[in-house]
Length: 161
Image 1 (cartoon, rainbow, N blue to C red):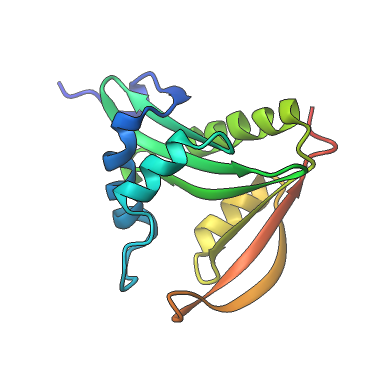
Image 2: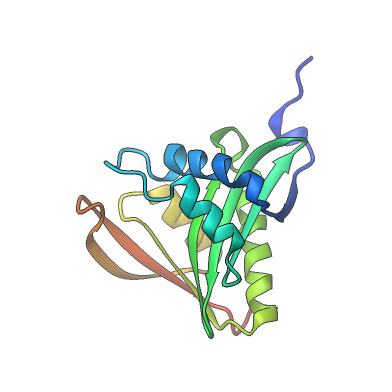
């Protein structure tokens, strides 16, 4: 009998440089799909993992990486650069738990808000972020490779415990 994905224990932890290639490939396959160039290359992901201004996390079940997140920390605001969960593991609170992990880090660091951009036509992602308290903001035409609009979303953390 094969084990179902939702029956497995998921661990969220800081990403290591050795996770960078897998994170970049997942970004290309799950986030940057259909765009003409690869923005989050392995080199760029490795740089983010090593940056003192960035937190990169992975969600794993056993040895399999099933999700990841990359967040940049400014003085008062943070920016969620990337968040992805493998399709077979979605709707199991993994994305929610990763965002919560990152936002708790923001609270510790004194960060007041988190912003992100999402493809304006990605209704599921927009609904997901709204469920976490993110508010719709500015629509940015041609944000993605001069082709697709992005919706900027923001979560004000002052009320997050």
